[in-house]
Picture 1: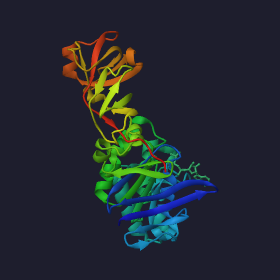
Picture 2: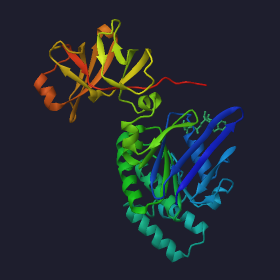
Picture 3: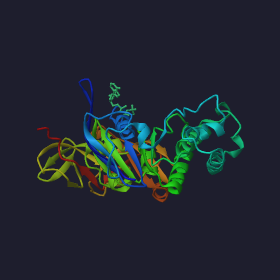
Picture 4: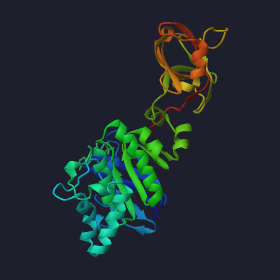
Length: 355
Ligand code: ATP
């Protein structure tokens, strides 16, 4: 069951929450709606669910136009940030709830609930009340409760938002495995780019009620469409440069040339060059090269990549550089030392034109 939203617009009074948003979610895939707070993710999810009617545009489930169909008739499973389990019902009854509403026969209910509880390894909690569960366990129950009536579509709104970092990571891996088993077309809202990139087959990056970019995680990460996407994905150095004759120059006197394939119109003027931490190198000598003198402020060697934070005083810039453990050992870097930082690659985007 594929889901397609086409040119969806939604206003709340004078405020435009969504403007001409088109998103497609292929059958059986897991799609993440990613964006900062207020970008319209939840509004779009609610429109896809049938909890909200758009002012313009359409929503299709496969070939059916469901734009004006109620949520009840769309056969959608929901999971919200706050598990919203029924406190006065046992875990078993929580999962069984949607089946009882649909008047499934008792034996079928027992089999289905048993099977799902086994899947999330919470069979032994069947007779307990939600209060006896941890946050992660509650969210697993919320997920199987949503899946119990075999929905055609699963929609999740910040499903791990209320959990601590470690449980979040565990649950996101679990959601991915779970999805691979069920293949229910799923859309989940998150403002956490790491979560979106780790879990989803496709990422839709939203900003101010519009879609900035959508595609496979690797495609979005390696080929961000614009400055917003590049910045929002995080972990990037932003260097103010002057573009002159097709070259990007850093510093008042244009001392350092930033190697870049200019993506925009090659206009002279100011621009921002975006460089990811692994696209910079650290060395002990300038070698007459194209580099910045910088002082090491902090080193984080915990992990397979060593993260070095430096201050390039001449340029008034803090710079983050990732180097391999091997390179770090060879260079024997220490905080406070002065070293040379060489940019190896950068991206410059065309300026935003508003017509
Ligand atoms: P968050 O990550 O903070 O949940 P979001 O990207 O999901 O944000 P939405 O909840 O879709 O954003 O909200 C988009 C914008 O629409 C926000 O500015 C919000 O204040 C506004 N909005 C949403 N629902 C309503 C409503 N019922 N009435 C008025 N304004 C609303």
